[in-house]
Length: 358
Image: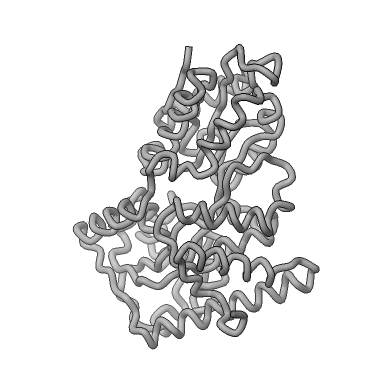
């Protein structure tokens, strides 16, 4: 019988204990060449259960795995950090605590040095496009950074903006402000505009904004909405910060235990889960922005001259980051050029690409 469960966080935590005790994440087939028995796959994500990611992408993706396998794959969802904090989700998959999962690469600084290219500022507004770009960059430049897992997809996420209590008109307005960073290249970009980056998980941001320990947030509209942060930061500066690098990964042992006839199904469904499910589209992005505007958030674009100043600062971040990694013998500039090529191929402007490298 096919079983799929999507639980609210407290119940997920209880089930996580049962998972560790019983080893339900292990494949149940005895012969990888056939799929006579049902495969049970545990999927983990840090996204909250009520988030659009879980409701419109992960649950439908797991449903698709079950349906396309005619019930030979059964999935169990552990969401909302039920198996551990967001920063551990890559390791949760790599060490087998979960068979498959979604992980944010930039939450483990230094572990995936070239993959930080995915978090450089680029104007991406839907996850399907982001995943197409990520797949191409992974295939051309990033494979060596993921030897410990089966990579199903990586993506540069969607564009993040700056959210504050007060309007921001110039780069001088952010000087000295303490701004929450999602990690990755956003930390460097925040520093480049004269602000102080503060890395913290999104579930800590509301209190930090309320007590004044931070003055603003860099994140994407869906995450601002999911965590209700529009109630503490109702001014959005529409500057392109890029976002984090993320992806869907599978434990190698779990992958090797999957029958050969089921592997193509998993790859087909998961190589671009946003295409598979129709979740997190550009229309979704526009709807979230409209809802945030209706809630009272004021969206403001910089003047063209002012935006050019911010983008020049971000381009210098790229130059400095490339110089650092090249000094360590890593092909950072080539990776940046590949990212730019794939962005252009998908109609995306990579605003942090140094113009003299074209």
